[in-house]
Length: 426
Image 1 (cartoon, rainbow, N blue to C red):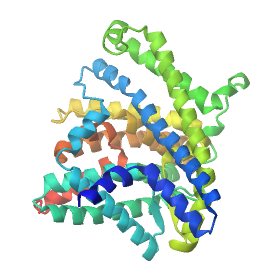
Image 2: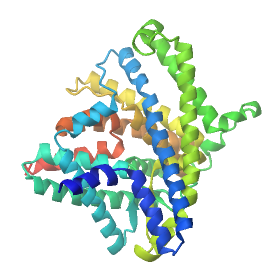
Image 3: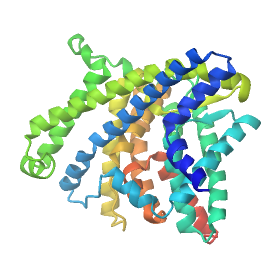
């Protein structure tokens, strides 16, 4: 068991290894030679690492905003240290989480092979933390023994991995750059809501990406430039509202807020560039390689990949989605405060950025500007209210959920928690 847990925690939990193995297996199935397989696998793993590290660091760059916004609204500030939160959160459920993650992935593969839902969930970092959510809900919300938690949790995770990819595969039709794969991302429920809202109330003819701007401002259509400027202004504005003296004392370490904001904006733009470069490198290798799996091993299957793959085609939607989700999240926070809700909640900024961007992309693809705005505003409300419902249910897993609770955590987590309460937690 210890060897198996070591492999799960140190190999299978590293999404880069799974991505590399997919390329190797796919190219072996296509009878490629080793001198073709090796460089393709390496380039795919490097591309994925650029996306993953870029996404994590970019998300981390947002965390100072959380402290400043907490000060502005005179709210309790929670730890933004992801490493510390992860260590605290996994202390009581680490073994269950690891086993649910491993067996859940196996169930996903079996469902893809033997049912009509031909989707292989390849975002291991997503399923790993979702396994933790399921483990926490079952451990702290039931009287199930260890084996029962692992068995039921594995089935739930396998079903989630398969069916979230399946309904996103329907929603992704018509999204530029989404050909040949589906998304394996914990914003799937938000993507579904954004798609439905956009189709019902949007207008595809008014594409957010075709927004008319003066010719001399055409450089803003480049995501790196636009995000750098937007984030610089956002950091500077919030620093001013929080007061320069407080910000310099508590956030910047004495650094001038203008310099601090400029550096944060440039850092943000740099990591977006890293992500976009990684996207191009990874897609050029993994899609052709996966054809071997789709043709030989799991017929007609599609890979489920991460959301940043769509960012290059929707630079304006990424920015609008983040800002709209942030605004509605803050509005939801104030509503809960006015209602004296017993759990203090705050918009988790990393999920707000990525799921906000994702829902705006799908909203724009299906309903233009109106769809993008409606979808991402709805996403912000789902994140904040769902987090408020979820936190009392997950025990020691709460610290990581305050930082990383994306839309699926805040939708499916409370639903599962309420279901367990309904049946007496047994």
